Length: 222
Image (tube, rainbow, N blue to C red; front, side, top):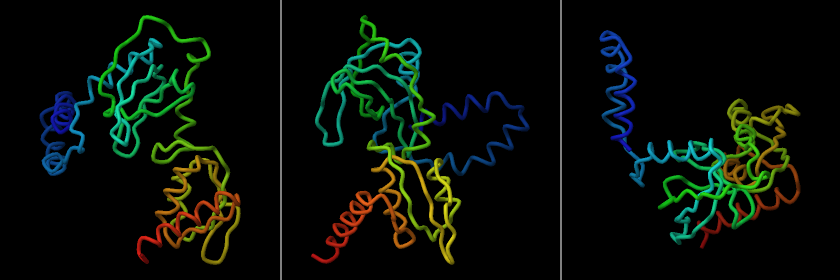
C-alpha cells in the first residue's frame, strides 16, 4: 500500500546524512507522490513477516483463501517460499489437501491459523525457489518442457525472460531459441510478442499455440 511504501522509504531515509536525504528526496519525490497502490489495497508487511517466520519454523497452517473465481476455500499448508512476481507476492506451499505444492497469492489469503502438529519429513525439504524463478513466467503453474521458437524481436529480452535458454541457430532476420520453461506461462509471454514469434517445437505445444491464436482471432471476426 502507499502507506507501507512511504513508511519503508522513511525508514531507509533515516539512515542517510541530511545532505544525502535532500538529494534522495529530490530523486524520488515525483515517483513517490504519483505512486498508485494495487487494487487489493491490503497491507502486506505484517503478513510477509509472519509467513517468513512460519517458513523458517516449518509451521503448518490452516488458511482461508479466495480463488480467482471469488470462491472461498480452506487449505492446510506448509509454507516453503515467498516469491514476488508481476506486482504480487506469492507463498509457495505444500497443500495437504491437494498433496502437492501450490501457489497462493498472499493478498488473497483471508485468514490463517498456525497448527501445533508438525509436517512430515518429506514436506519439510527446502524448496528450490531459485530454480522455480528460472523456469516460470507470471507465476502460472504447468508442466516443465523444452521449447524451440523462432524470434525476430530483441534477442536479449527473450533470453532474459527465459533464463534457461540459448540461441541454437542464427537466421537472416531472426534466431532460433531453445528454452526450458513452464508451458502455460511461456505461452502467455510468447503470445504477447505477436508476429515476432513462431513456435517450432514440441508439436503439442505448437498446436496449443495455434488453437489459442485461432480463439483470439474469433474475438475480432464474430
